[in-house]
Image (cartoon, rainbow, N blue to C red; front, side, top):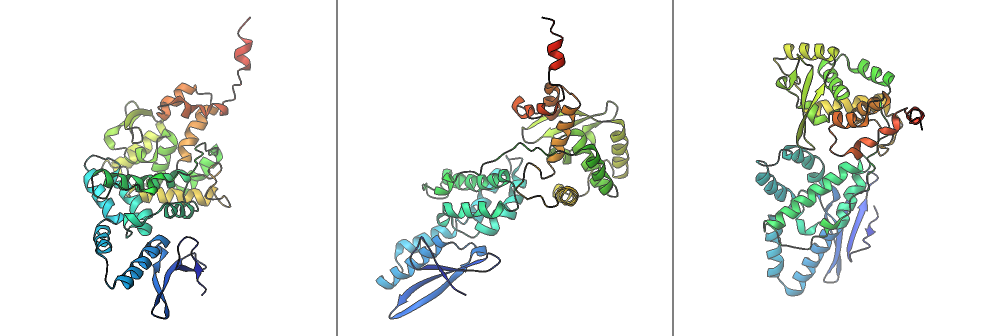
Length: 360
């Protein structure tokens, strides 16, 4: 397999498999011989900058006949400051004060740790983060990728602030976010909602979960955290926690949903869910993909149906049914009316009748 020369570093090469996996090498002279040394794989956290550092260490050691104290010191310094260890440091200090830290830990372990966990923070460069963005854009939305990169930046910044690492001018902190277009246009039509219900009605727990998402328009985490005590069956009102804004608000529910909820909690000792949020989310996402996303690109936020589309569907049908925009804002728990105004275009009220009634 041929080796490709690095465009940035002398003596650094890599080979690439069809799967996209890269293996990195360095080359240097030992006497009259040219030595090739395998450093490691991209999936193991190895990058060109790290290979260049290792090559420079070897050449310096050859020249001086021993390992320079400065390099040995740097090795000791970086050994305790891998990204995994810095995240653990951040997590231990934040878990008592940050309500979202457990979800942060799950996303970190799934997306960031496999690529960067073993890397010392000093070796991560901006190109590594951009490469991460290019890899994840194939499967994740730009907004999600920005949150992951922000998480990496937060961990590094926290370590600097608390003198865990040197106050270096870390260029990772300067990497720009991907451009995000939050205006989803696809919402489920009534016949599509019926199709979704029919596809999951055999799974009572997933059915209730989906019903609540569609009938309340609440965010996924808010729906999952509804407890028996949050449900007022007499007045048919649910108290919902909005974790994004750290607020609570009231939402109404129908007689049909009331009967489903009563039956569910009576059969499950006042609990709505047995499975985890991630399990239910994955089941619902897979079903949405199966029903509505065939041949739709993963990055097509305009037309792809995701779990959050159910919240969008709730608001869209309110607008179609001529619900006043301020009422929609209240029911969606939007803090800014600008977030609600995107649904105004779905109203059939063009204003013609209102102008006719002016009388002047």
